Length: 185
Ligand code: 5GP
Ligand code: MG
Image 1: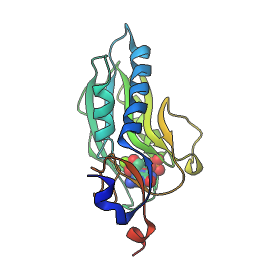
Image 2: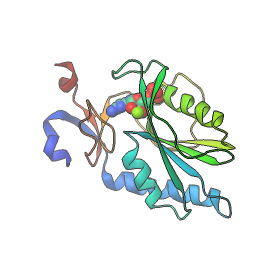
Image 3: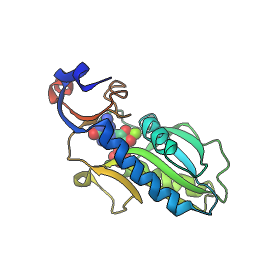
Image 4: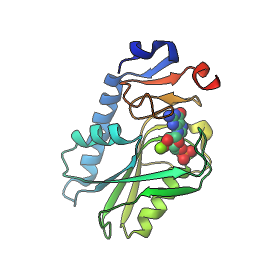
């Protein structure tokens, strides 16, 4: 889906598909350099928002990663975070002794990535790095910094490239600010 297809509901284009791909080229090169000569990491994508970024990142890697996916839901299904999660689909690979990169679409409060890092450590991973395509520095509740970050964004509700509003807009090619009239109605 293109921006023009939903132009009435978009107030700003933050990153075009080309800009996102160019940044993913750089991040993939960093990961390849990090893992050169080492056992390839396991990418754990957080469903559903990280599907496009996990796939587009992995396509660009030379290192032969494995994938796993987890689905979690925040206790409160809204546009904010509570810090408590329910597991809807758990990890299936054995992560004992593995290097893992957790991939998410956006680091907002940080509750999701912090909680996932703990769970993956509990699953026996040797090392857990965090990858967030976007981060909203104004909203962070924690002081950790993911090892890999695509872009910083302002504290506005964004959609596209995996990020949804009520399960829509995930397939929008660009990352855009959703017009407030869409969720204020
Ligand atoms: P955190 O746990 O860091 O507060 O939030 C992370 C999750 O909140 C993301 O995986 C995403 O699902 C959701 N989220 C946070 N900010 C936004 C946003 O601007 N747009 C969308 N679509 N989801 C967001
Ligand atoms: Mg999410």
